[in-house]
Amino acid sequence: MDRAKLKELVYLGTVTYYLVITLLVLAYTTVALRLWVRFRITKSPGWDDAAMVATLLLFTCYCAFIFVFISRSQERRLFSPDSIHVTLIYIQLSEVFYILTTTLLKVSLGLFFLRVLSAPWQTRIFHIILGISTIYGLIYILITIFQCGNPSKLADSLLGSPKCLPGPFLLTTGYLYGTINVLADWTFVLIPITVLISSDLDTRSKISVSLVMALGAIGSLSSIMRMIYLHGLALTNGNGLMASSIKATMWATAEPGTGIIAASIAILRPLVRAIATSVRSRVTEIDSNKSCYPSTADTVALTEQKSSVCSVTTDGPWSPTVVVGQAKAQSVRSVGVVDGRGDGGIKRVSV
Image: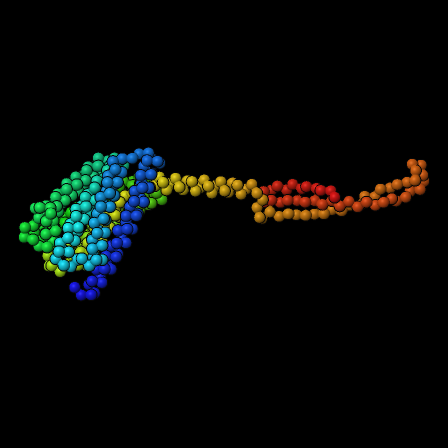
């Protein structure tokens, strides 16, 4: 393998590493918030939540195998025959957990939508999709595990062993599984959106819910991209792992990861409403407290009035002489506080 291809493999391995970490962190965060909403806010946990938790655990196992694969690639244990054989065992095991994860994810999504759909034709379609997806998922798992008869020889099929199922057959089963996933994803998106459009929700709520539900279409995009690079996993040419192999792994990781995140975000509307209500209440309380104090726009008008009071004194009550006595000056200051609320009170202070 030339240096350019090796550099590309290392780069794709690094991207896959950070992709897995990001999806795991977001998946655990959103599922934790989902459980908080179901148990503490709406108090309505269901089997779809249990299925989602199981899906998250299976996805974690799948990611663990991907980490092992990345670790072996960094140690350059990918290209010798023995190293390839061991690495392919991990790849095949990750494939098994990928199928388990995506199949159970569809079950969780179907159970969630069955809780909110009421029309008979809608529930009938969902039951059919769930049945087909689950049954074929189980069949695909059995094909993957026993494709060479003895599960201990699981990786032999990728090396072109004549004792295993033919490569074209395995690719066909993989393409069929991806097609079923795409159809299921779009069914889970389009039918609820059509129901939402005919609902009594306001336009803003309809748009926000539709955008959240449309996130589920990302999973179908990942499934399509995985099918494009699926042939890269058939390493019958003996040249070791190729870029298409890692790209197929990347999209296979993104499919259940984004599905778990999108499905959990769709449950968080009560939490968002609770936070918005709390913020509005806090803002109202702050505004109410501010209204108790004069604003900076208040003006203070000062007026000063001066008046002289003359006292007239005489030498006696019957004296004909009038003497102008001492003149006492009195200063009166009038302070008017205008606070912008029409409160025009005047306080007079005599000095």
